[in-house]
Amino acid sequence: MIIRDSLIKRFEFCYELTWKFIKDYVEKFHDISIASPKKVFNECLKQNLTSLEETETLLNMVDDRNMTTHLYDEASTEEISQRIHHYFKVMNITIQRLKQNIIQ
Image 1 (cartoon, rainbow, N blue to C red):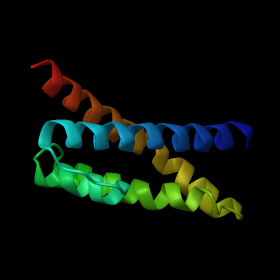
Image 2 (cartoon, one colour):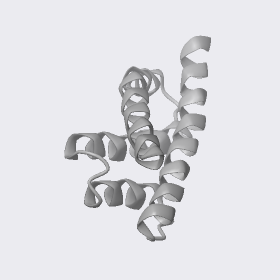
Image 3 (cartoon, rainbow, N blue to C red):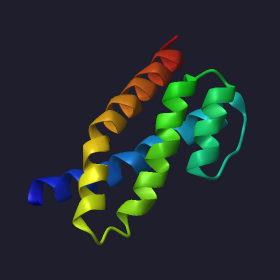
């Protein structure tokens, strides 16, 4: 239980850093100002920065992140913790892709 709860807390932290990094990227390289995570991830799809599947995962991630602040039952906590590994993978892929675009 402690490990799972730590995983969720780390997920919350990484989620915040990820969407804000992508927000800054979109603002700087595409001159588009966006204020919410879902709009940022949808813009990624529009700019061909993420695939449809990646974007759907990122949007689902937003919903799960919002739920983590209101987790009161064991079943929901466990369900979200099982999806976090996939979210980390997609966040990492997306960030690495954007970093490559910056380097080029």
